[in-house]
Length: 280
Image 1 (cartoon, rainbow, N blue to C red):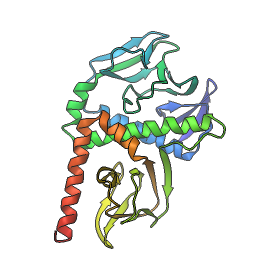
Image 2: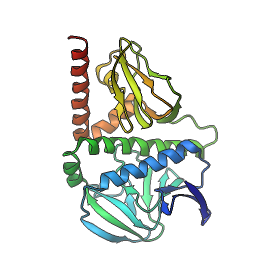
Image 3: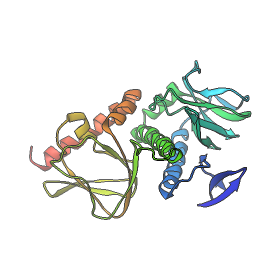
Image 4: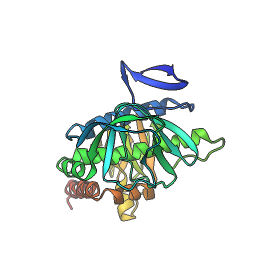
Protein backbone atom coordinates (compact mmCIF):
# COMPACT_ATOMS: atom_id res chain seq x y z
CA UNK A 1 0.00 0.00 0.00
CA UNK A 2 1.40 3.35 -1.00
CA UNK A 3 0.45 6.76 0.39
CA UNK A 4 0.15 10.20 -1.16
CA UNK A 5 -1.05 13.63 -0.09
CA UNK A 6 -3.77 15.30 -2.15
CA UNK A 7 -5.60 18.47 -1.20
CA UNK A 8 -4.16 18.36 2.30
CA UNK A 9 -5.63 14.91 2.98
CA UNK A 10 -3.83 11.62 3.30
CA UNK A 11 -4.99 9.11 0.71
CA UNK A 12 -4.02 5.45 0.71
CA UNK A 13 -3.65 3.57 -2.56
CA UNK A 14 -3.40 -0.10 -3.40
CA UNK A 15 -1.65 -0.07 -6.78
CA UNK A 16 -3.68 2.47 -8.75
CA UNK A 17 -6.95 1.80 -6.91
CA UNK A 18 -8.04 4.15 -4.15
CA UNK A 19 -9.10 2.64 -0.85
CA UNK A 20 -12.39 3.70 0.61
CA UNK A 21 -11.57 6.43 3.12
CA UNK A 22 -9.14 9.24 3.62
CA UNK A 23 -8.51 11.26 6.75
CA UNK A 24 -6.21 13.96 8.06
CA UNK A 25 -6.05 12.31 11.48
CA UNK A 26 -2.94 10.43 12.55
CA UNK A 27 -3.59 6.70 12.36
CA UNK A 28 -1.58 3.51 12.77
CA UNK A 29 -1.07 0.31 10.75
CA UNK A 30 -4.13 -1.34 12.29
CA UNK A 31 -6.28 1.40 10.75
CA UNK A 32 -4.76 0.73 7.32
CA UNK A 33 -5.50 -3.00 7.65
CA UNK A 34 -9.06 -2.30 8.76
CA UNK A 35 -9.51 0.21 5.96
CA UNK A 36 -8.45 -2.29 3.31
CA UNK A 37 -10.62 -5.07 4.75
CA UNK A 38 -13.62 -2.72 4.72
CA UNK A 39 -13.16 -2.15 1.00
CA UNK A 40 -12.87 -5.89 0.31
CA UNK A 41 -16.14 -6.50 2.17
CA UNK A 42 -17.85 -3.68 0.27
CA UNK A 43 -16.83 -5.19 -3.06
CA UNK A 44 -18.12 -8.63 -2.03
CA UNK A 45 -21.43 -7.24 -0.80
CA UNK A 46 -22.12 -5.29 -4.00
CA UNK A 47 -21.04 -8.08 -6.38
CA UNK A 48 -24.39 -9.98 -6.45
CA UNK A 49 -26.51 -6.80 -6.57
CA UNK A 50 -27.95 -4.65 -9.37
CA UNK A 51 -28.19 -0.90 -8.80
CA UNK A 52 -31.65 0.64 -9.12
CA UNK A 53 -30.01 3.81 -10.43
CA UNK A 54 -26.48 4.38 -11.73
CA UNK A 55 -24.39 7.55 -11.66
CA UNK A 56 -27.07 9.53 -9.87
CA UNK A 57 -26.04 13.09 -9.07
CA UNK A 58 -26.53 14.21 -5.47
CA UNK A 59 -26.25 17.98 -5.29
CA UNK A 60 -24.13 19.95 -2.83
CA UNK A 61 -25.35 20.59 0.73
CA UNK A 62 -27.56 17.47 0.66
CA UNK A 63 -27.77 15.23 3.74
CA UNK A 64 -27.30 11.69 2.44
CA UNK A 65 -27.30 9.95 5.84
CA UNK A 66 -28.49 11.48 9.09
CA UNK A 67 -31.45 12.27 11.35
CA UNK A 68 -33.16 14.52 8.76
CA UNK A 69 -33.17 11.92 5.98
CA UNK A 70 -36.71 10.63 5.46
CA UNK A 71 -35.96 7.73 3.14
CA UNK A 72 -33.75 5.08 4.75
CA UNK A 73 -34.43 2.12 2.42
CA UNK A 74 -31.56 3.02 0.11
CA UNK A 75 -27.79 2.80 0.30
CA UNK A 76 -25.20 4.08 -2.13
CA UNK A 77 -21.83 3.29 -3.64
CA UNK A 78 -19.58 6.25 -4.35
CA UNK A 79 -18.71 6.60 -8.03
CA UNK A 80 -17.10 10.03 -8.05
CA UNK A 81 -16.52 12.73 -5.47
CA UNK A 82 -15.97 12.77 -1.71
CA UNK A 83 -18.48 12.75 1.15
CA UNK A 84 -17.53 13.83 4.69
CA UNK A 85 -18.59 11.73 7.66
CA UNK A 86 -19.26 13.96 10.67
CA UNK A 87 -19.92 12.90 14.26
CA UNK A 88 -21.08 15.81 16.39
CA UNK A 89 -18.98 18.67 15.04
CA UNK A 90 -15.94 16.51 14.21
CA UNK A 91 -15.26 15.60 10.57
CA UNK A 92 -13.58 12.20 10.82
CA UNK A 93 -13.00 11.12 7.22
CA UNK A 94 -14.32 11.34 3.66
CA UNK A 95 -15.93 8.46 1.80
CA UNK A 96 -14.10 7.89 -1.46
CA UNK A 97 -14.62 5.94 -4.67
CA UNK A 98 -16.09 2.45 -4.13
CA UNK A 99 -17.23 3.05 -0.54
CA UNK A 100 -20.74 2.06 0.59
CA UNK A 101 -22.79 4.86 2.16
CA UNK A 102 -25.80 4.30 4.40
CA UNK A 103 -25.13 0.64 5.22
CA UNK A 104 -24.07 1.36 8.81
CA UNK A 105 -27.57 1.38 10.37
CA UNK A 106 -26.37 -0.83 13.21
CA UNK A 107 -24.57 2.15 14.72
CA UNK A 108 -27.72 4.21 15.35
CA UNK A 109 -25.67 7.30 16.25
CA UNK A 110 -27.96 10.32 16.08
CA UNK A 111 -24.98 12.68 16.05
CA UNK A 112 -23.60 11.15 12.83
CA UNK A 113 -24.43 12.66 9.48
CA UNK A 114 -23.01 12.65 5.98
CA UNK A 115 -23.77 15.83 4.03
CA UNK A 116 -22.23 16.72 0.67
CA UNK A 117 -19.91 19.70 0.38
CA UNK A 118 -20.01 19.41 -3.40
CA UNK A 119 -22.02 17.34 -5.87
CA UNK A 120 -21.20 13.62 -5.96
CA UNK A 121 -22.06 10.71 -8.25
CA UNK A 122 -23.38 7.48 -6.74
CA UNK A 123 -24.94 4.14 -7.66
CA UNK A 124 -28.17 3.57 -5.73
CA UNK A 125 -29.21 0.22 -4.18
CA UNK A 126 -32.42 -0.93 -2.51
CA UNK A 127 -31.69 -2.17 1.04
CA UNK A 128 -34.62 -4.58 1.18
CA UNK A 129 -33.78 -6.18 -2.16
CA UNK A 130 -30.13 -6.40 -1.11
CA UNK A 131 -31.06 -8.23 2.11
CA UNK A 132 -33.20 -10.69 0.13
CA UNK A 133 -30.30 -11.40 -2.21
CA UNK A 134 -27.77 -11.68 0.63
CA UNK A 135 -30.08 -14.04 2.54
CA UNK A 136 -29.48 -16.61 -0.22
CA UNK A 137 -25.82 -16.74 0.78
CA UNK A 138 -24.86 -16.98 4.49
CA UNK A 139 -21.38 -15.68 3.64
CA UNK A 140 -22.93 -12.42 2.41
CA UNK A 141 -24.84 -12.04 5.67
CA UNK A 142 -21.68 -12.57 7.67
CA UNK A 143 -19.95 -10.03 5.44
CA UNK A 144 -22.70 -7.55 6.29
CA UNK A 145 -22.27 -8.07 10.03
CA UNK A 146 -18.51 -7.83 9.66
CA UNK A 147 -18.82 -4.68 7.54
CA UNK A 148 -20.97 -2.92 10.13
CA UNK A 149 -18.66 -3.96 12.97
CA UNK A 150 -15.59 -2.81 11.03
CA UNK A 151 -17.18 0.51 10.11
CA UNK A 152 -18.10 1.14 13.75
CA UNK A 153 -14.56 0.25 14.80
CA UNK A 154 -13.19 2.66 12.21
CA UNK A 155 -15.37 5.52 13.42
CA UNK A 156 -14.61 4.95 17.09
CA UNK A 157 -10.89 4.61 16.39
CA UNK A 158 -10.92 7.94 14.56
CA UNK A 159 -12.93 9.56 17.34
CA UNK A 160 -10.28 8.40 19.82
CA UNK A 161 -7.57 9.84 17.54
CA UNK A 162 -9.37 13.18 17.31
CA UNK A 163 -9.76 13.81 21.04
CA UNK A 164 -6.77 14.20 23.35
CA UNK A 165 -7.00 11.71 26.20
CA UNK A 166 -10.01 9.97 24.67
CA UNK A 167 -11.12 6.68 26.18
CA UNK A 168 -10.48 3.51 24.23
CA UNK A 169 -13.21 2.70 21.71
CA UNK A 170 -15.67 -0.08 22.48
CA UNK A 171 -14.55 -1.77 19.28
CA UNK A 172 -10.87 -2.66 19.43
CA UNK A 173 -8.45 -3.99 16.82
CA UNK A 174 -5.93 -6.26 18.48
CA UNK A 175 -2.90 -8.07 17.09
CA UNK A 176 -2.55 -11.60 18.47
CA UNK A 177 0.69 -13.58 18.53
CA UNK A 178 1.09 -17.20 17.52
CA UNK A 179 -0.32 -19.63 20.14
CA UNK A 180 -1.82 -16.78 22.19
CA UNK A 181 -5.10 -17.71 23.93
CA UNK A 182 -7.94 -15.47 22.75
CA UNK A 183 -10.73 -17.25 24.62
CA UNK A 184 -10.22 -19.74 27.46
CA UNK A 185 -12.70 -22.52 28.19
CA UNK A 186 -14.49 -22.08 31.52
CA UNK A 187 -13.90 -18.33 31.84
CA UNK A 188 -16.74 -15.84 31.79
CA UNK A 189 -16.99 -13.13 29.17
CA UNK A 190 -19.39 -11.60 26.66
CA UNK A 191 -16.96 -10.05 24.18
CA UNK A 192 -17.49 -11.16 20.59
CA UNK A 193 -14.68 -11.34 18.03
CA UNK A 194 -14.13 -11.24 14.29
CA UNK A 195 -11.03 -12.69 12.66
CA UNK A 196 -9.61 -9.99 10.38
CA UNK A 197 -6.36 -11.71 9.43
CA UNK A 198 -5.02 -15.18 10.14
CA UNK A 199 -6.74 -18.14 11.78
CA UNK A 200 -7.22 -19.82 15.15
CA UNK A 201 -7.77 -23.33 16.46
CA UNK A 202 -10.71 -24.30 18.69
CA UNK A 203 -10.27 -26.76 21.57
CA UNK A 204 -12.76 -28.40 23.93
CA UNK A 205 -11.19 -30.24 26.88
CA UNK A 206 -7.79 -29.99 25.10
CA UNK A 207 -9.17 -31.71 21.97
CA UNK A 208 -9.16 -29.70 18.73
CA UNK A 209 -12.71 -29.45 17.36
CA UNK A 210 -12.43 -26.76 14.70
CA UNK A 211 -10.70 -23.89 12.92
CA UNK A 212 -11.70 -20.22 12.80
CA UNK A 213 -10.78 -18.52 9.53
CA UNK A 214 -10.81 -14.94 8.24
CA UNK A 215 -14.10 -13.02 8.44
CA UNK A 216 -15.56 -15.54 10.93
CA UNK A 217 -17.34 -14.29 14.04
CA UNK A 218 -16.65 -16.21 17.25
CA UNK A 219 -17.27 -15.91 20.97
CA UNK A 220 -20.98 -15.18 20.47
CA UNK A 221 -22.05 -18.41 22.24
CA UNK A 222 -21.37 -17.00 25.72
CA UNK A 223 -23.12 -13.76 24.78
CA UNK A 224 -26.28 -15.64 23.83
CA UNK A 225 -26.29 -18.17 26.67
CA UNK A 226 -24.74 -16.18 29.52
CA UNK A 227 -22.69 -19.29 30.33
CA UNK A 228 -18.88 -19.53 30.68
CA UNK A 229 -16.83 -20.01 27.55
CA UNK A 230 -17.46 -23.48 26.12
CA UNK A 231 -14.17 -23.73 24.22
CA UNK A 232 -10.63 -22.42 24.06
CA UNK A 233 -9.59 -20.43 20.99
CA UNK A 234 -5.84 -20.25 20.31
CA UNK A 235 -4.11 -18.29 17.54
CA UNK A 236 -2.58 -20.48 14.84
CA UNK A 237 0.07 -18.02 13.69
CA UNK A 238 -0.01 -14.23 14.07
CA UNK A 239 -3.53 -12.80 13.75
CA UNK A 240 -5.41 -9.52 13.75
CA UNK A 241 -8.80 -9.62 15.45
CA UNK A 242 -11.62 -7.19 16.09
CA UNK A 243 -13.09 -7.35 19.60
CA UNK A 244 -16.33 -5.69 20.57
CA UNK A 245 -18.62 -5.76 23.58
CA UNK A 246 -21.57 -8.13 23.60
CA UNK A 247 -24.01 -5.22 23.89
CA UNK A 248 -22.62 -3.65 20.71
CA UNK A 249 -22.89 -7.00 18.93
CA UNK A 250 -26.48 -7.29 20.13
CA UNK A 251 -27.33 -3.83 18.78
CA UNK A 252 -26.03 -4.74 15.33
CA UNK A 253 -27.75 -8.12 15.42
CA UNK A 254 -31.12 -6.52 16.21
CA UNK A 255 -30.76 -4.25 13.18
CA UNK A 256 -30.11 -7.31 10.96
CA UNK A 257 -32.55 -10.08 11.98
CA UNK A 258 -31.86 -12.17 8.86
CA UNK A 259 -28.14 -12.15 9.56
CA UNK A 260 -28.95 -12.97 13.17
CA UNK A 261 -30.81 -16.08 12.02
CA UNK A 262 -27.77 -17.29 10.08
CA UNK A 263 -25.53 -16.77 13.11
CA UNK A 264 -28.03 -18.75 15.21
CA UNK A 265 -27.90 -21.58 12.65
CA UNK A 266 -24.11 -21.56 12.77
CA UNK A 267 -24.21 -21.61 16.57
CA UNK A 268 -26.61 -24.56 16.55
CA UNK A 269 -24.37 -26.43 14.12
CA UNK A 270 -21.34 -25.87 16.33
CA UNK A 271 -23.21 -27.08 19.42
CA UNK A 272 -24.34 -30.18 17.56
CA UNK A 273 -20.80 -30.93 16.42
CA UNK A 274 -19.43 -30.47 19.94
CA UNK A 275 -22.03 -32.90 21.27
CA UNK A 276 -21.04 -35.48 18.65
CA UNK A 277 -17.36 -35.06 19.44
CA UNK A 278 -18.07 -35.72 23.11
CA UNK A 279 -20.57 -38.53 22.62
CA UNK A 280 -23.50 -36.40 23.82
